[in-house]
Image (cartoon, rainbow over all chains, first blue to last red; front, side, top):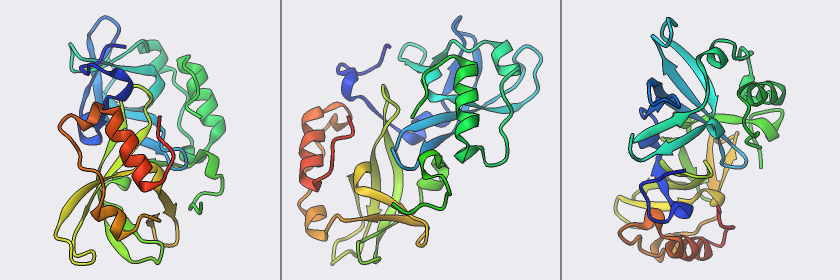
Length: 119
Length: 119
């Protein structure tokens, strides 16, 4: 992971600099923006970035929860890069009511995007 | 820790519901508000809540970084409770320039407030 910081072990970023940040595909095409974060109340771990995107291969403006573990900061782009594909986004598991406390949804979502669980 | 959620292991909260939340002392007196969060870019862990407070035992409006590990959510108060005392706040280590990537500051701050390191 590239970061702007000399000591990446201790690089902190303000929440307001994450929300609104741009998300890019592996090929550095812009996919969307981070709208807000979902934070595990107990551990303080950011679980998901809720991304707004539109016009990504014909998709309309939409909102999708992306596991934080699928994003990595890229200092050169001043944004986040994800390996998630348009197909993965289109086929992402739907968020059921109460998804914020639904570990089964969390498991499905992380499995779908192929990234480690946040918990 | 009390939470509003039946399954506290999986309770997620939106970042915009944390920023602006009220912080209370152990005696449930309001201490301040959470202004924003500082997030570890690498791990996705919330490291600090930057709290704005004023009028707390005569202190003026100030901003202080509080380890996330010193806060616990209280559903009854719909806010966060901390065991941090006014004395601890007043004597908190100053944040040096570049504190966002200064592990020594992080160590001092967590030791000062008597809570586990976030890393």
